[in-house]
Length: 505
Image (cartoon, rainbow, N blue to C red; front, side):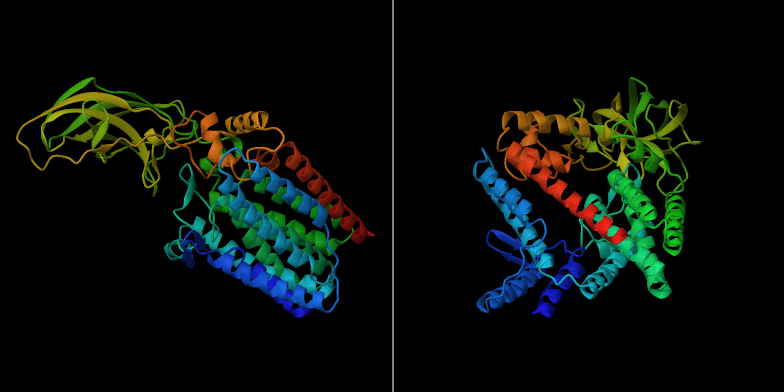
């Protein structure tokens, strides 16, 4: 029986960071992923064991924190049933939350022996190493690795022009949370094995932590970076009387700092990511351009343009992703795009914030005569256009004459700036929702479906959340669910502190 529960737990540990992007089973009204199938099999095995034990009259302990978690789940169920809208979505999310509670109970049912604990920790090092190494290679943009990772998530995520690592997880923040967890418990295992003089085991764990920690750093998750520093500091303080453990932890901290500096090269996008709320002010340009031009169809002309860097980031030429000046051809009223990709004009030198550069911009006229609006736009190649990063374009009215040199352009809508709400705005809307629904909230996971109305948005990003776990619980389940979650967090903290104090004695 013990072995079956361990196998179920091991399957969860090994499979957790490897959920395929494409569902493995699709039935009407339901899409089942590879990870959900593994979890279902693990829970089925554990449930069978529990049923057999019940038939034999054997009882298991209810496990640590089961009561607080059960009360939180009950509060969320009430909130889902009472949700003023999107009740079905709230109940679906509650089902996933319930599956998570069952996974917790599975682990709580494991025999709390030293052998079981070390076995699971050793197993967790395997996926942690794979996720860590894949993350570092993703940051280095190794083509084969990027192609492989597409099986687990969509397009890469960027902070400005810099990759934010998600490795095999769906999004960088999710990758950061997973790596935080495995880093925490493997850090304790490193200190333990190093202090006992188990050099080979300690060396292997050290290498896994180096890969996982480096990958965590280049997720560019600010909270995760702070947590990593706090974990190293806490482990160091706990190992003050164990010199070998302290030496291993110190070496790990130094190498993580060095690897992060080596990979990022002190890049401005990393620094801006760590010191600003969002990218709204990173890439802004001001333009001095002619009011009107006359061109012949297909003509290429040099047009004098002055461009001022009004953002926080410098523009660099000559790299793999250089900054260029370009343009888009729009219809006369500016409502549609006739030609989106214009010729590029290189910068003669890096342009720092506040600097102005004078350029002779290369412009090719459309092949169809008519009146157009020329929209000037900066871009970073293979990354983004400034007009989609909240920087307005400048416009020149252009009359194009001559014989048609090609078919009329296929018009399409002008792409607008990407959607972005900064953290203070998100938190403000969350508090507004809580004010309107104080007792039971808006329903689990319903913030993302509701905040758009409070932000007065016609179209909102349904992947948004409150970016604050505690606030998310209050908004989802009201004061009742939020206070119960705070109680659970307090109980979990007390349990961790008591365990640390017991091990220190």
